Image (tube, rainbow, N blue to C red; front, side):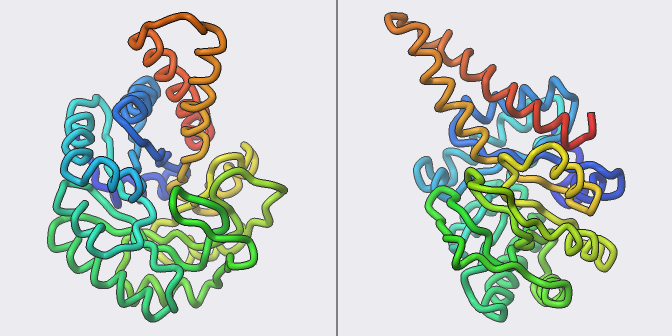
Length: 281
């Protein structure tokens, strides 16, 4: 079931004071588990794929699978490409049916980031697809993209507004002190920038590095203006830790269907936990 677009979902979240969960999936089982959680909560959801996942399956193969799942769901499911640093890959996913793409040109200079984003935006908008852009460098590891803490950079208000205006992106992911992966200490998050951006522009704000932030931090970010929160590592842990737990408890059991159902529950439970926080439930 398709009801609202990527931007419409984020704008509704912004206006209503909640955040829509964007969960990185990596196969059919994880995608279905996230959708089942969303249906149980009766909430819209964003299914994100990394470029690494797309490369492994192929844009057409995984795109076809995700579109079928999305159309058959009883809630709105948006299919989104996360952290794409290659223009051709972004275009391939746009052509294969993604609803939105995130082009990550944050490793380039500001002007080159804008130039590349504009190219993706022009291609996407002509096909009814939306674009998220990133400004500043977010620390941590996201599949095959790694940024160490010494290379991470946060951004300011004026630079962010300039980037949004010149690039034409539909959503902004600013580097505010969050990190991909597992936090090694308490993050120093720039809540004030999120709030200033919310007041200064209509463009929705995306929060990357959602795994492990904690309930209070999530609530502060949403109140400040975060409309989309990305969760990747927690979903991977639910899957991998679930595998270890199942085989530890059932070392001699050979039942793939039971195993898949166990993992489905683990991923769904993790998804629901985050959705409850993002919607203030």
